[in-house]
Amino acid sequence: MTNDRSGLVPDRKAVTGGFSASVDFASSVLAGLVIGLGLDWLFGTRPVFIVLFVVAGFIAGFYKLWRTSAVLEEMAEERRRGL
Image (cartoon, rainbow, N blue to C red):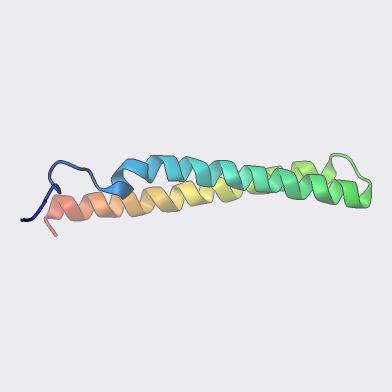
């Protein structure tokens, strides 16, 4: 007896795709903030490294979003072609 529910249950990646992209973005910004705070504490500067690394985190987060959207667009194009 097979329990084929592939038509009823969506693919896990389809469900979590947007969530994982937003977590990637937020974690990039948060990592930049933590690194900036640590370097500012270490060198006794304020807020030089916080600003630099938060901006770097935003750039990295947007790059990850761009890369993810490119993959999703490619998958959609393959579906349109019937591959």
